[in-house]
Length: 300
Image (tube, rainbow, N blue to C red; front, side, top):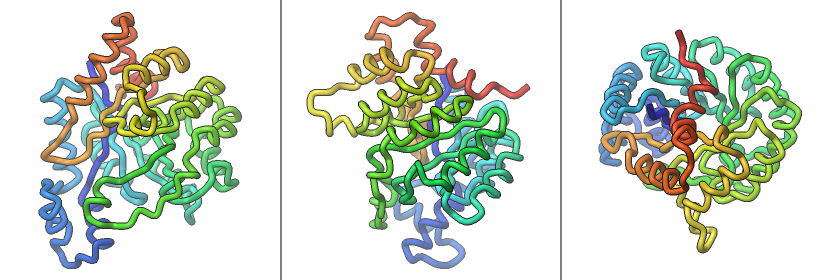
């Protein structure tokens, strides 16, 4: 069974926020935005969650994360997870330096299935060693069964680029090595670095080697390979298996919007790569499903 550790939940509120930033107004601004993008309007959180279930069923995907992709949209994901608790695990974006960030975290974690706080330090421009971040992580680590997701390396939000919205990011804040303090002092907290570090593969492998609670997700097309001439995704998988081991790799696609839906091509490519490395079938099953189930046990 396939489990996907990296899917975005592009909700009505997500599009409303983008529409506001684009300068659109009125009751139907998000519909106007999705029409401009040539994407499907998501409808309600319940309707979107049902559509995702149908999409996962189509490709025989058992479970997936759902990531609230703007701060403040955690309630949309919480509704989706509560509607389909055996299919989804709730991830949610938080700026830990914002006012009342810990209060928002605590409230969100009261919803069943909301398990992973997602930090984007380059997007919100803060250092991972900031005292406010450390205090936030302490609150998260104090809740059993939670995880931390930290986007490192190259950050580019395709929908913002397509809409001509500015991306005022500072990638200097997204160095995986800055996670060592958090990971080494909060050893019971699993920490996920997506996209193999998104261009900072060496640094991601270094911190994963030093800290056994660091996980790498394999999601997206991994276009960051263009920054490493001659490097192939097959070599990335081989090195990640050698350093982090098969129990700390989480398959993901970075799926997000409809009508594109679940990115089965990413799965087909990565599955073929892992099998080409000649690893045992049990290793394949752990990467593409078992490790996700271990991090996020299926609810009764």
